[in-house]
Image 1: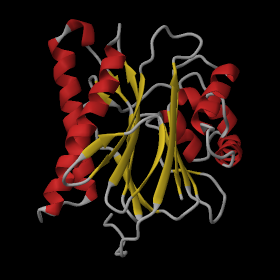
Image 2: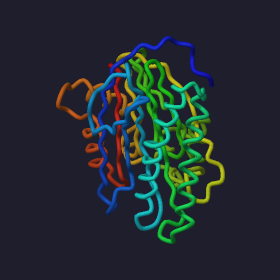
Image 3: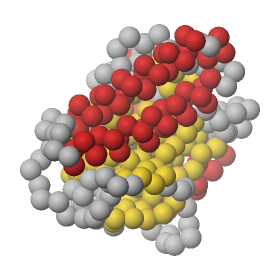
Image 4: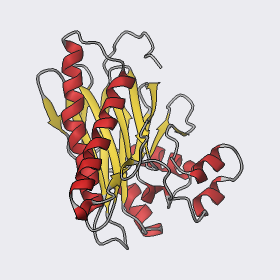
Length: 280
């Protein structure tokens, strides 16, 4: 899975994020993160903003923590904290001539998070069994690299075709049934075991190999990272329509907030998070 041999051409990015605890949960175990970094510096991004890949790489991630008491919150926070420490360090090593394929960097990151969660979970009774999903997008001038584990999702809406694609695969048996054509999207969304994970970071999971991939992005492309609370309220085609409609509303409007608030109103059984990135 080597990256295509493309000359770098900087692009602009716009991003919008929002999270909500929903109508039922008393706490929010979701988390999202935006970072930009280069060899000299690293900046944590706010809920919305814009920037250029001319001198910085950008990383966006969502995680959905699970566990007793507040262990799910701790799990998702550990995941985002590890990203902040790990990827800029890898960027610096690369700049110093220590080459590493993106697959190696992201696999090492996921292993690091898994080890940290396993250690904390085994050391503190209140954190026993803590685990989290993690879906991550890493934007360089021409390529978006992604990594994923769990049932949070990464969607890709290319400007060229206008047809939404789900880049990530849920680590559930129900999603495997859907991907192999044994059930349809409606049946998958209402299946009683749709949220039973076969793989996540932490907990008792032994194998944490993340799904990895890369997309050559173009101006006008839209990416959506979200937790399952958002998926509960929107079919994939509905998400495509909402993304096109809301990202066209212009300055001062947060399309991620609109998506999350709509999802909470329609469903709201779970924590709900959306992170939208548009290439401009």
